[in-house]
Image 1 (tube, helix red, strand yellow):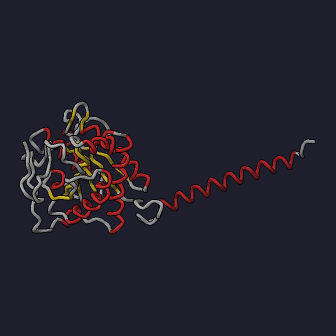
Image 2 (tube, helix red, strand yellow):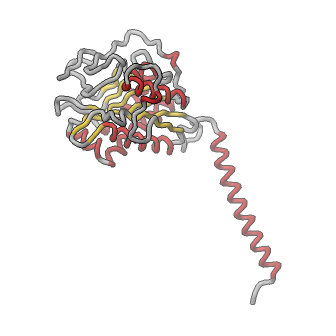
Image 3 (cartoon, rainbow, N blue to C red):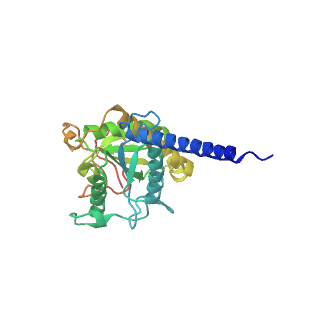
Length: 283
């Protein structure tokens, strides 16, 4: 026996009303999350925070390389994974590059292509109004025994030093080694950035254990998760300061092998076995 027409219409209206209520509830929930203050939602601790991730090198500049493995490829792979990790935490992430390209076309005043490439990365980070700049790199050495993740910060930025320490805390669990350290350096990107900035050397291509992590998809995920955790912990403490925080005095510069006149580094970038801040060994 078929139900009366009026009853059937009522059922359809009830179903439509139920669908509309569910849709409006979902929209309201999404809107309420967007309206909350940055970091207020425990499920999205980076909500409203802006992080710029810079995959080092690219295009005609391969960076460090060993056999057919290049720094530019590893840094981009980890950067994409890091952007996903930070996005899952609610953060807004910008990357200076998402393909195998160099960025000299964004530079303005530096004389060399390499210098304009570095300048372009800083200008992009500033145009994105990033709170933080995290530049990803891979290291190499003339000794297979040297290994471990390292994080560099500008010696005049207290906030950058805190960010470096926070990232190293977790990075050293993925790529442990005798070179694990958070150290000051006068790299162009660190010196010129208008926000707290760090340069992360995720590990050494020339170190067997580091290389296994750097080239494997699972290892790259672990690196991205560790760096994201460090960023999250840093941002959860208090808001980062801007360029005016660069007033710290008395912190020695780290003398680096391969440090160019434009503040760029070339492989290998290694520490000597002596105390941090002393002259670095090199070939």
